[in-house]
Length: 186
Image (cartoon, rainbow, N blue to C red; front, side, top):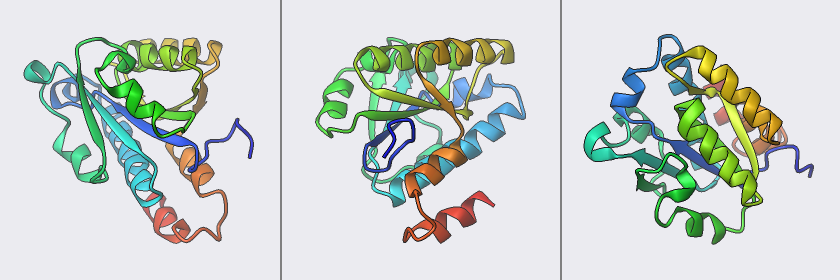
């Protein structure tokens, strides 16, 4: 297995701050595409038994995770509240990552240039191989998203997309979940 490919055995999916008030600030059609890609990742992770974590930035003011996203999350998804922009600062999140022994993290969420970027940078610094699904992140200003993606690339984050990640997780058309997941992509 190449460490340059995302692996179901080694991955952890983190969904960053997919809350109604933050999502409402994202431009259409970016928001719709990002939600579609995020839900694909969440459903695939659930089927493939990949741990999923969701963070919520100041939920008292911004609301809990969006109901549309919640529907796609596996039952075992852990949710962490935070006020810091990096998810790594959410109380209990780092130990929950470490205990799995998985060294790859796939990121999706908002905003690309703030919470996703800072989370990615911190995860790289902690020694994780970080993947960001470019079609599963958004910023209010598309220029800020482009800048964030470039900065993450410069720091060693692998920029991918949700479909590539899912097919890397599957690895083979003979995988028992291949038909189920490929049908969701079409």
